[in-house]
Image (cartoon, rainbow, N blue to C red; front, side):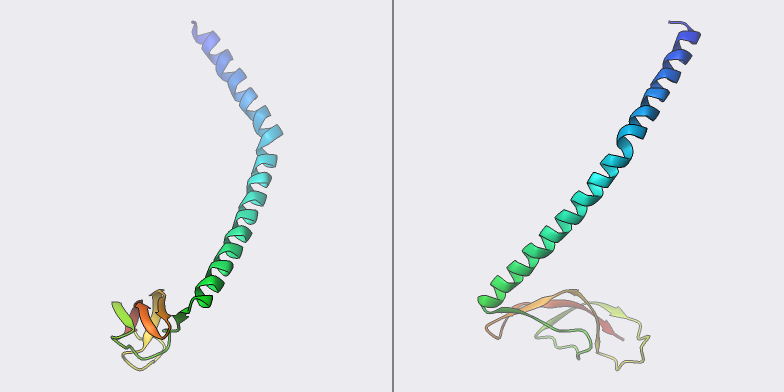
Amino acid sequence: MTAQNCRGRQTRDAASFARYHRRHGKSTAIRRGVGAAFRERKCASFIKKFLALLEKQGILPFISVGTPFNHELHEAVAMGENTTAAVPGIVLDELRRGYLWNNALLRHAQVRVAE
């Protein structure tokens, strides 16, 4: 194969790729976007139904952010800088939600606590 044949083949391949991209690139991107939105709606719907099922069984999440740290309900994963002038020991962020099952602790909430 000569250098001229290689250059010619590269040019044809590049043109072929550009044609393919022009014809199919935008439409596949649009289809992927629509598919992603559909999957997100399906996921949101599933999560909503799953949480309703948990609630029916007596499993409820509890709110931690803004409440004082309670070692019986919370697991301190990190200490955070107190930027909101909150009282030390207040839960700033919830990294993993905690759950109660018929008012008994099922899972500790992993939280970041103000210093």
